[in-house]
Image (cartoon, rainbow, N blue to C red; front, side, top):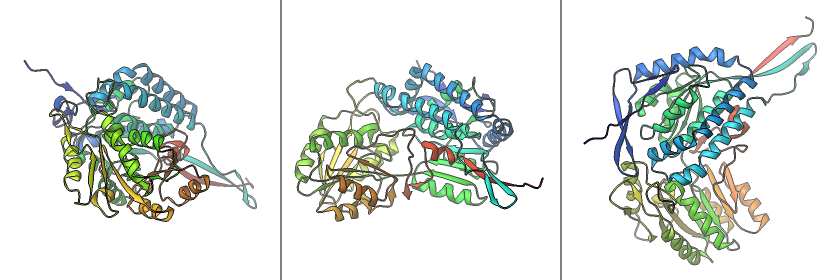
Length: 479
């Protein structure tokens, strides 16, 4: 007997459709390595149709009032909450994430973020209207940019979809969203839920691969392209968008330094860093995977972290004792394993460093010490459950090592010295600095980096404003 595969479809102009040419791609559950669904492998015709639907819907959605957009987003949030079990199940099958943690740690923030942007729709910022020239009154209009082409990643498919569509729709834009080709299921389910709330064409989902995303970004219709992905993908998007001067919003890779000083609460630091490094199998651009520890406590810290790693469990989604599930796909498993296989002779694997089981794409919680600043594993993003540890002598060297990478998304400092914490937060060249914690996010505060981590902000009023444009209107008082 063979089990019939689930059939996912695009959502274009309020209708669920197969790819125009009938092509599909297999969708694999990374916890089992087995195909469980097919999704459209969308081509140019599908992208054209989605862009046309979004463009046709834009004037009507643009002209809705902020309160109307707020009400729609609040309905979406309520509907997501009411169907939370379905969304969590789809996401777990998408990614292999633990069901319990997805329900407690991802679904509630998603719903909260939608409700935040619902409120942001009614709080547009602008300079005070006034007479800045004699006889003339100036006002500022803040308007939606238009159709937005959005590409979401596979590490947090549901949450990143929310980070994309919620601010865009709140600001009055229309959206064509592409989920990752490995994780389309939860996004298609979102479209099913949203279908009863938004006018046709305001929200569209196109499934496909890199070529599909490329076609979206290069399309002449969108006024803005937004992507969460690799640095290479971000550079390609920026280059493509430059050809017709599209606005670009990029949230790319990270290599977060975690700076632990000698006066830190060592037990708390180890416990929190292990969770922040291994949660979601380390597949997080802000993950606490590059630890810098003062030389006086280095050995003690490494021993404690190796013990915490050994006690951290990975496994199947329905196991309530696991902290994280599998890596997303075979290529990612190979990438993580490759970093460990290529370690220099001076490095030491203190814990883990191997695949777990022969089914699915699981990798053991890993700790590597003895590393130097120019080592590959220090400079490049592993995106797996691997925490590296380096030692430093003083605050100056800690900053040198922390800032000495091409990424600049997030960082943390662990110390009881308030002055030191303030100096470090000032001098760390990262978009976020946590003090005595690592990884919490709130809807009200911005998320985004510098350097090769991209530009633009997710979450917060800053993220909302990224999806608006500013117009100056001046009128003569003479009538």
